[in-house]
Length: 580
Image (tube, rainbow, N blue to C red; front, side, top):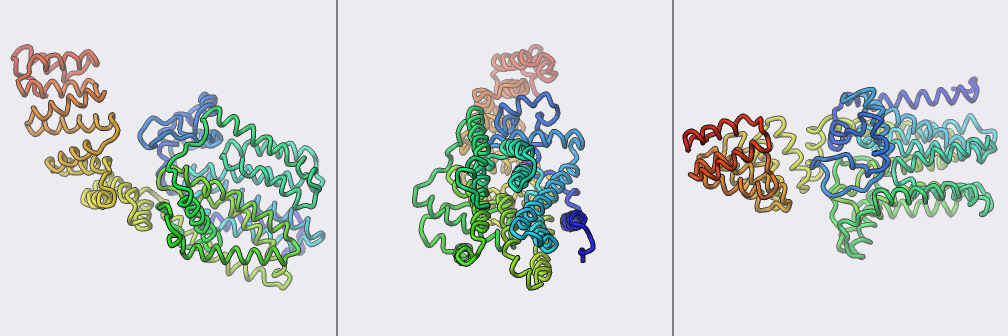
């Protein structure tokens, strides 16, 4: 079909097809909105609004900019490149999500191009003079990577730009490294090292992958010392980065530690999940609640069966293949990329342990491994048929998965369906329903959350808000009382006391209002409005001197507070006139 074209033109045609097919599958993704982490990292992130924040970006943790309550606990991820990329997008698109989605899709297309280029370089090195045939195999690898359903999450979720950028910069560095090893200019070697450093500052996983440059030298058949010499700058860069990172944000937080046996079983379970979704990426869920395995029976699953079969197949392939070094190299590519999310299970915060986005980089290696595996089949003229048969289901599955990331409602509705016993999914869906003023549905989801996790103070608080909006004040008060009793955070408890005080005041129960408002003040919730409410409650319960002091304190905090002025004036003139 392309036999009359030069090598460069054939490559350009293949790249154009890759881009068109990828955009066709993800067509319309730019119509989606912000969801999950997108809100804090874009709409509430001052760092991306001006280059003046660059020093702060490089001297702080990933979430160092955030002042709200979206993140619980201190994050010590360090990924400054993510903020720089978002800064560029913000300069172009401000708070319009369409542009950010387009950037993610562009990064994905560029990553597919790099899979094509790397596979081409490696295959041509293995098969001198077989360029026209080997272009079809890199093309197959690039499409397999581009359309793999596990890629849907990082492509359509704006906040996953770190996954896309780290993959782009690492593969660009690796491609230049390969070209340099095949006799190209030494300038490419220096450029490769520089781009690898950018990958390090994009995501910490790049540190774990530094040995791949050394292992590639061994795969080429280079002497051990020479392979180590070529890979040494990358290893050195990784060590320096770890030192810089640790100096700025400290070591990784050890959260949710478990016993050694539980940890081992959980590692096996996660490994099986990732392998199963790598080789059979259908039915990928938006949410996978994590439960630590405690016995061998917990890990006997379909995923474990896939892992055993895949391991056996690979073992036979390595044993019989004349390209076992290449096979082993790409197996290392896959395994090393998955090592952090699997082995760090003891340290990952919250329920978000397994996620398909963590497969993104590994899928690139797996795609190239398949290209090498298709070499023998391609000699029999069956590669095009295999490509179509394999990739059509991938394309449909990716297009289907894309639709669940359109907005918060679509996402959390699907997530709650994926994980019906997860309190997080029901609680989050309840918030979305409440924002849509679908209060009956919000109450249903909050109540479902409480059945699963009865100690959820935040959910009781949210339920109280909904009951208040539906004019069921008594139920709202009951929910807030439960939230206060369960709250472990003094500041949040103070805010709940303030709300309860205002509600009791509204019901004409000033004595109860005083009790809660005083506890709110004691918890540090002492703004002018709170002191004004306290003054009203004190006056209503006949404590006029204390009411006078509360109104005075409100005006001391905010001399322009009209309500406090009015109430203080009424109290001064009539003694009992405070009432707002």
